[in-house]
Length: 629
Image (cartoon, rainbow, N blue to C red; front, top):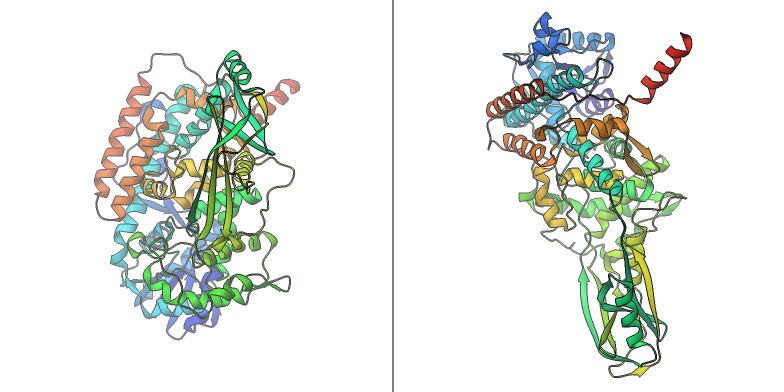
C-alpha cells in the first residue's frame, strides 16, 4: 500500500479524489492501492529544555547556555494530535512507499519529515512537488513524483532554522528575563522578532528626536501654471525674500521647452511580500490576513502556491498562459466579465515574452503568484479583492508598455530660473488594468503625498513657446522639514525584505532579498508575535512601539541580537544551505558559539539595568491586587 500524507484534511481529500482513494476511514482515505492521511500543520516540535535534562526545567542563570548534544523532536501535547499521529504511525509502519504531499516549501518539508521520523518510517519516500492545487497539477505531480533525497538540502535548511531559533530564543529569553526582568516579566527575544522590533523602535526614536526646521520655497504662477525655482529651498527667510524682491514686477520669460517620449514597463508579478504590501496599502489588510486569504485562494485552486519570494515564471509556464488568460476572460464578478475587455486585444495572438517575466534562472522551488485559470466561484469580498490584484498583475505583463511624453518647461525672471514638468499618457498600455484604488475609508494613507505629487507630474501642461514672455504672480511659502514616517505593515515588510535598508529600485530590491530578515511566509507571524508580546501596537495604520518594546531594545547591548544586517547574514547562510553552498553543521556550530558569547557578556554585565515597564495586562492585575489588599 502507498501512503500519501498531506498537510491538511482538505488537501488530503482533493488528492484522494484524484488518485481514487474514495473510501473514508477514521483519519485517512483508502482506495486504488493508496491510503491518504493528513497532519494539521505541525504535529511534532523540537523538544523543550526539560525534555533533555530535569536541570533545565526551572529557569536559572547557572544552567545557561542550554546546548543539547543532539536535538530531538517530540509530539505536540494535544489529544487530537496524538490520536491522528497514532493513525499515521500505524499506516506508515505497514507502507511499501510513502508519498510526502506536504506544502511544497521549507516548512512543509520539515512538518512531514518530522512526522515520518517520529513514526519510524523505513520504506522509500517520494515527494509530490506542485505549484497549484488544480486537478491537472495534482495529476501531473503524481506522474512526476520526485525522490525525497532531492529535497534533503531543503530539509536541512528548515532544520537549521528551527534549531537556530531554539538556541537563540530559549537561551536569550531566559537570560534577559532572569538578568533584567526583575522576576516579574518574561522578556521574549527572537532571531527575527528582536531585529524587527529594533527597526520600529529606531524609527520611532528618529521621529521623537526630530527637530523641524523651516525653509522657504520660491514659486511663481505664469499662465495658470505653477513654476518652482530650480535653486531649491532657501534656508533663511531673508534669502528667500531677497530672491522674491528680485523677480517682483519683472516679466517671466520661457527659456526652454523640451518634450521627451518614454515607456513604462508593467510591474513585475507578485511574490508574497509585494502582495502583502499592496493589500496593506490599498485595503488596510494585515500581513497575516493577506497570507491567510492567498492561502485560501491556493487551496480553492484559484491561484498558485503563495509562500514565494520570486517575481518570475519559469519558461515552461509560458505555453500554459493562454489557457490561464482564457479562464480569466470567462471570470465574472457580480455578473460582469471583469477582465474580458483587457484580454480581448491580446487574445488569439502570440503572447509577449520578456526576461522580466519569464526567467527560469530566477525560479528555485516555485514561481511568482499567478491565477491558475480555474474560474473563481463563491469568493468572500476580501478574497475577491486579493484575487483581483493577482489577476490584473498577471494580465498586465502581457499588455504593451505604457507610452508617455514628458514636457519640461524652463523659465527665467532676471537671473532666477524656474521649472515645471508635466506628463501626458499617449498610450496607456498595461495601465488599463490598474483599476480603481480602494483605500481604507477615512484614513490618510502614507502614500497620499506621493500620490499627489505623481498626479501633479502627470498633468498635461498648456502649450508654451520658447521666448514667450508675460506677467506672473510670485509666491514665497514657508514650509517645515518633516520627520520620516512611522512604519506601517507595508513599509515594515519592505524593510524586513531588505534588512532595514530603504531600496526603491525593484531590481536592486530583488537582489537584496537574499539578506532579508525572516522568510516571506514567516514575516506576518513575526509581526503578530510583536503585538502579542505587547512590544508594539497599532495606531490606525501606524505601528508604534510600546514603552516595554522601547525599553527592551534599549536594554539589549549585544548587536547580534538586534541588528538587521547580522540577522540578514544568517538568513543568507540558511538560503545557501538550501542551495548546498553552506554546511548546516557549521551554521549550528557558529550559532552555538554566538549564544555562548552572548550569555557570557550578559552574565558579566556590571550595570544595574532593569526593565521597569510591564504589559497593560500585568499592570491591570497588579492594580487589582492592590485594591483587594
